[in-house]
Image (cartoon, rainbow, N blue to C red; front, side, top):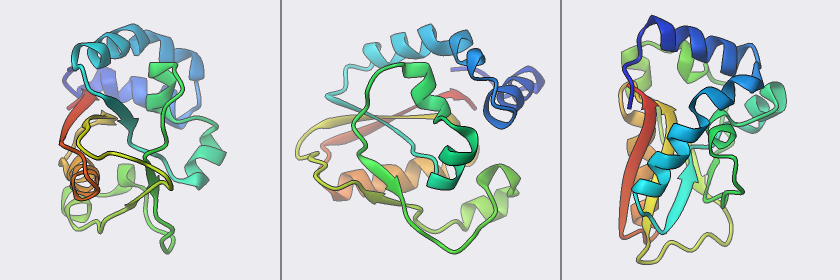
Length: 147
């Protein structure tokens, strides 16, 4: 939706990494409208790790959407790794599948909208979309605020 430029970088630094949760309101309406326009049967957000959720206190994408969301995807427990935001392009492309399906998620024949904050290499979206399709989704469409 928007170019990832210096202004977006500053926004994400304050919102995600400095925990300025009030900044969710800056893009909440536009993200909510974008979700509605995509007409999916189910909307899932790319999850953050339990450690990130505990540290940050919120999932930045869920903060924009301001609605209860089906869990759908979960992060897999892995050995301590470097956060995506700290990896270079090549390291991001080598990232193994970080997701697993949440229990009782039913996707059979449904159109899924997958929402994330930043599209960098596309690896996160591809991992999630692959898993969702393997688990019965009819289609997966990605939506990110910045690229």
